[in-house]
Structure formats: C-alpha cells, structure tokens
Image 1 (cartoon, rainbow, N blue to C red):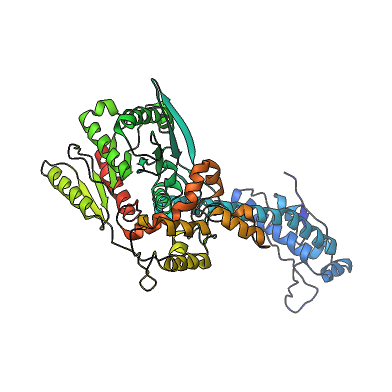
Image 2 (image 1 turned 60 degrees about the vertical axis):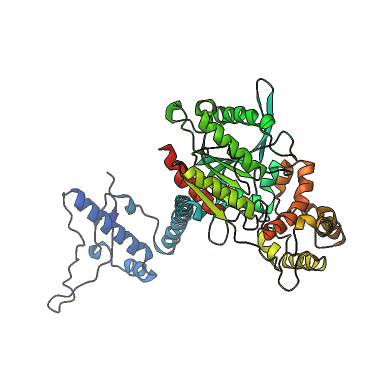
Length: 506
C-alpha cells in the first residue's frame, strides 16, 4: 500500500529551563504493527494531521519557512485514503471546500430526497392499514367526488343482453389537510354490492343523485365493488318475467369471467370469490327479495351468484318469498303500512330460526334549512352558501316549505310544478348563461351538482338531464320521509354486511 509522509506542527516543551533542549512529541509511534485496530487509529490520526495542516493559519506556513523544519514535525506513516494531499495554505483550504461541496452536498441532498420519499411511502402504508378511517373517495381537481364509471353490455346465449354499470373501488389516501393525488386500485374487491334501483329511476342515478352517491361513496370506501344492473325498461319497474333469468345468467357470467381473473389465487389457482351483497330500493327491493328466495330454493343454479347479505329499502317482501340470507330492512317512519308489513314478515321468518334480520327505521321528517344543499354538496364548490340560501328562499316562496319551521309542508310529489320551476332556475342552461355573462366564471366549468367531469363523460344525455333535476326532488322526498331511497343508516348496513356476510362464508 502506498505511503504518504504527513507532518504536523507540535508544541515545543521546555525541560529544565533550557530552551535549546527540545523534544518532538510523537503523535503515534512508528512501527511495524499493522493490525486492523492500529490501521484504523493510524488513519484517524492521519486525517486529523492532514486537516490540521490544511486548515491552519498562514502563520504556520511562515514559521515553517523561517527555519522550523522537519526536526519539529511529526512523521506519520499513512495507509489510508484520507492521506491524499490537496495542497497547502489558502489553496489547500479552497480545494478542500470545493471537494467537500462537490461530494458531500449532492450526497446530502440525495439522502434527504430518499428519506422524504421513504417517509411518504411509510405514511401512505400506515394510512392504508388504518382502514376506512384513513381513506376517502377519489376527487377531481375541483374536489368533487370522482366516480370512474365503467359501462359494459353483457351478453349470454341465447338472447340475454343487458347494460351493466361497474365501479371498482378506487381510493385516495387522505393526508393532513388534503388527499394525496394518487389512486389506490383494489384488484380484487373486499366484496361486490349489486344495486337495483326503483321504478322511474336510471341505474346510473346511483352515481349522481345525492343519496345514491353518498351510499356508493361509503361502499367504495369499505372496499366494495359496485355492479348496477339496468332494467328491461329503464324508467319502468323490475319485472321478474323479463329481468329475473337475465340478471341471473349475466351476473354469473360477470363473476366467472371478470371477477375470477381479478381474484385468482396464487400461481393461477382457482379464484376465491369475495362475498356478494345486494341492495334494492322500492321495486328494486322487491326484486332482491325474489332473487334471495330463488337462491334459497336452488343454490346450485345460481352459484356463484349467491348473496351473503342484503339490504331492502322502502319495500316489504312478498308473502310467498322466503329466504335465510342475513337482511337489513330500511323503512321510513312516514310509511307505517310498509313498516308493519316488514315487521310481520320478519316475525314470521324468525319463528323458523331464519335470519338474522334487522330493521332500520329513519328518524322522521327533516327540515330543509338555509345551508341544507351546501352540506349535501359539500364537495362541490358550485353549490355555494349564496345559492343554497337562494334555493331555500325559493322553496319558501313557492310554499314547498314552511318559512318559520323549515319543514316540508306537503308531499313534494304533489307539488311538481313548484319544484320544477325551482330546479329549472338552477339547471345547467341557466347557470351557463350566468357564467357567460360573468367575467369571473367559465361556462365550461358548469356541470350538474355533485357530478364530476369524468362522470359526465360516462353518462348518456337522458341521464345528464336527470342529474340536472333529481338533486332537488330526491332531497325533498327524503325530508318528507315517506318513500325515497336514503343513505340514512347505510353505514350500519355496511357494518352488518361485513359482520354477517363474512361469517357466512366461513
């Protein structure tokens, strides 16, 4: 190994008062001991000597030139890299600083960025492990809940064809103050929620109506995938003769093709399907009941399309339908007839040790306050406090709500003219005209309340027209609390699904 002789100025110690008698203090005795510990020690002392020589003041250089030569310098044999010389005096200092900057500063910055990226990954993983409390639905650039709707037409021989709306659970990690801008796609969902709407409603309205999109948001945050079937007549009601066999065959095809690939086991082994859940409102609820009854009678014919749990809203089961699938019934307190029929059916089924069953009854009629619509569309900046207050004033002026109590005066379904005149005042056409007349608004940024731009691209024209009006009538019907789809209690429904549905698979 190459050697380098380094010198370091040492203090002169006087002995016996004789200034001429001096001795050079040796920093490290020279010798042939090349053990690892000695080499490390020697390298350290070499580095100290080198830095002392380079960073010393100019006086030391002058003293060296004035006759203090090698007889009062320490000779250190060097066996390590730090002994490389960079020069003496000011030039040496400059060289050391330059090399320090060229090597250490980039290394420090690189380490900082690597630690920052590592920290972000750790934080994201911790938030993902926290479950739904650390997750939120994806948002677009304006903050609106952004559903990436996938429309597919499923076909099965002979003659079965139906459009199906699919939504995979796509989540964003919620950070402090805002969400991180990345999507956490779940390849195999935690479960599949099949959704069936009522008469006069599009299947797509689950994704843009106030109550529907809140339910879908909660379900996807639980890790559930959404499958919404269209009816044979979209604005009609579910008809078992036209829809029953088609839904069964196409649901089985969806599971055996799309879901089997996503949920395939390790090394290509057979898929382990997640639990299947069902939601139906009104006519859709009756249809879910009929499906559940048929699944009980002939499970082999329906497998693997078998519900682990179901939620039936604002509809009582048919008397001849019987099943043992865990079920939550959601009834509205204003519909006492349906509530009684549901209670009678549950009491009868419980006598033969079926279930479990659960009944959720809504809290009753609700006021429409000044900030009601601002809270409903809390994610949409279009629904400002000013517009929410203006809608409230229009409802009061039109006699839809009581100006002093904010309660809905009569069934909104019987006040169609008044309700229509209000939503038309705030529809797309009217708000775009306002935007065109304003210097601060862009008409291209106007969209139906609660509908992201990406979702708009997935909707048909008739569905966009529906989204432009449903926001008002649905909220008024929920406030009237008699017969309307509702997100009230849906968190309890999802908890019921995960508890009873998962246990049913074990």
